[in-house]
Length: 209
Ligand code: PRP
Ligand code: URA
Image 1 (cartoon, helix red, strand yellow):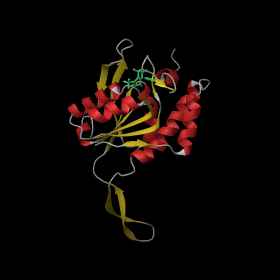
Image 2 (cartoon, helix red, strand yellow):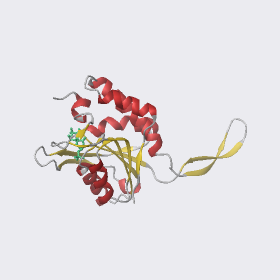
Image 3 (cartoon, protein in one colour):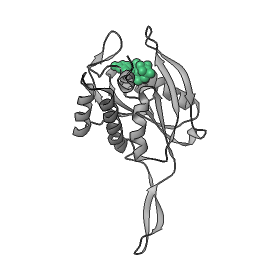
């Protein structure tokens, strides 16, 4: 069974509150999302396995530790997920980045795929799927299914704000995928937007609309 990790560190909660405010413009919104992504990345990668390596300090040789085994891939769901990539890359600069393009049909609210470009060795990597909004969960669930169809075995989902319905859907569809999220909000409205939420994340990041 997957685990839902609410990453409610005071700095994350504070920055998220500013992002939610309707007066916050795109420049600050992007900057805050970037900062929160880096802070959350610290938790998402907390249990990466380490291995012993022999190194030489200016004083002596020693057995020290480095991250072992699998390499990372960050996979943003376009568009809004792009806003979470740089924060994670600041922590893990050697990670590869794949892209999955999905938009929600305005009538059905179901995700529609329009793009996919993934690293060739994605099936060998520990994949962090990023998208600020987990509303119905359809986009995140479909993106994870696409990755599993490519052979990915170790996948985590990192979001900013979610609704209970979305988390329940991803956990039911993908019980092997842990979810990391900064806040779980109350509900979805009739347009399947998160309440209270922060509005349309893609539009707020890119200044569209
Ligand atoms: C938003 C958001 C998620 C999706 C969440 O994307 O970034 O991908 O909706 O909704 P769901 O959980 O109900 O699937 P949107 O479709 O608005 O596209 P955009 O990022 O290009 O604006
Ligand atoms: N997508 C968004 O950007 N915001 C929501 O609240 C729901 C879906």
